Length: 495
Image (cartoon, rainbow, N blue to C red; front, side):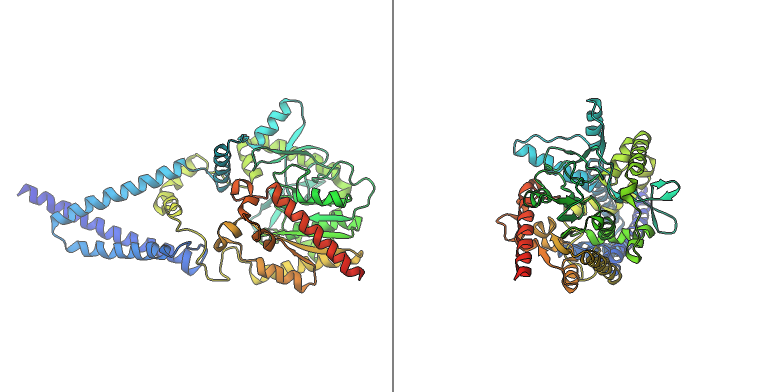
């Protein structure tokens, strides 16, 4: 009799758990519906995603409600099975969270290091700041590379503002520190370290001296020459045929920063050719850049910050900024330099841990159920809005007008990303819209995607076949196609 009363009480508790579990399952289904179907902020990458995200929790909710009519002993047994299964799943998720790298960048680094070990290659595993500090111990005055995008901070009104001010006026440097040993990046096993030029860009010393330039290259980290030797990036390879070629690329630059760089540094030189290297994520950079009133002034007027005349002041301000940030928190500054956010192992992170476990994000990622291919066309989270595409058109139009104003030619060069070959369904959706804008504006277009696609192994053009920038071979292909296209255009104009 006592045992039966115990079972009855336990069964009532189990019934309460069933009701709570059913409500939780409905909320889970609602969560997935909101993010994946209603707002489409995220996408499923397999056809099993909707079934497991909607069907499974709703089906389980129905079964839990039905279980309320089971016999007490069956209720108790089912509750024990469900509790033990749920705890096992949550423990597995917790283990994945605690052992996985703290960021996408870290996961990519680990994948590259693993691939390097598998091929018997050495890989420098130091952080960028560790390399800087080691160089300083050797008596070399080195700094980590810094870019405009790292200096922009969002204010309460949603606008972004530069952290740098000179004589009380906001200034957004478009390069880094001039004439300085600069530590940039490592994707191949060896860090790219170079001495910046007179205006802080990645060029040979003295290239500005005679004031004559034939070709100027604008772009982001790909143009800057990320992670390949300084003489092997595609701008350096173009320079072999056209010695007066200037590289004004900088990591994180989007269309507005590129337009600003064109007006500040290229326009006074009046080059014959300007190469606008567009990488797949540039409209995402524009999404943030448009919140900078300072950068937007380059679209609205013949505005200039006069950066060339302020290089000494910019150098002092940036060095002070870097040293201050390093002194305050080295790990925090390294995160900023890498443009990632690590999960801090502090009380704030611990408070979010239960929510992370409940979401089962790590398990869903491992099952391939998160992000990617089944988004409705035009609703991909990276798809540019109509307003963003129009702003891009305006930016490119302003660049075209400026270059034509001195008799030069602006070329639009499309650089494809790794996802376009590793998983085309994950590729950035803005390719055709931006190419349409460039062609509508009458710009000569150099599209590298068909060239990469025709390669026997396109993924081999990325370090260790992982997501990242181009290998030396990839840079060679870009340089050859650009040189060929420029030559053809010049020949057509002669005839």
